Length: 139
Image 1 (cartoon, rainbow, N blue to C red):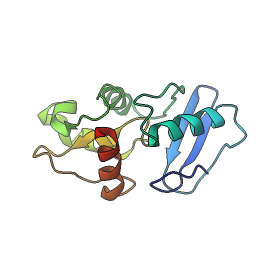
Image 2: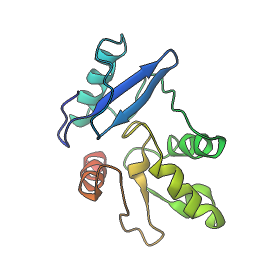
Image 3: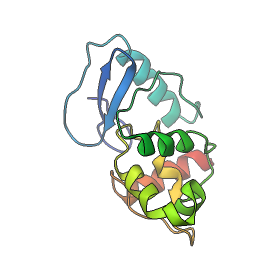
Image 4: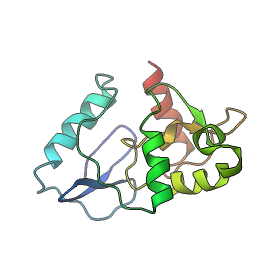
């Protein structure tokens, strides 16, 4: 478990890299060689010293989910996109589902996706955590 300003995170890895970073208690691969790297990068992020992450990501999901997660990685730190901008107006609901299924919190930044009116919408960790992350990134 990795302690952060928004609560504990649990991390899991496979041979390809980080597969899960979750707010929910679960598997935690603290013995993995990438674990200290993840802990360091998250510490730098929460200290306002890091805007991007270098740790290899290996999320598991459908082809559509992978496509949406790749688009999430293109949203610059401190910026937001709407679900419609992320996947097109006709696929906004599906994009929301892919964000909800995102297995790697923070590093695949689904917290940077907002409603079409700019309002904060659901987040796996809770809207309060989403607001904290967006505020942190704007500083």
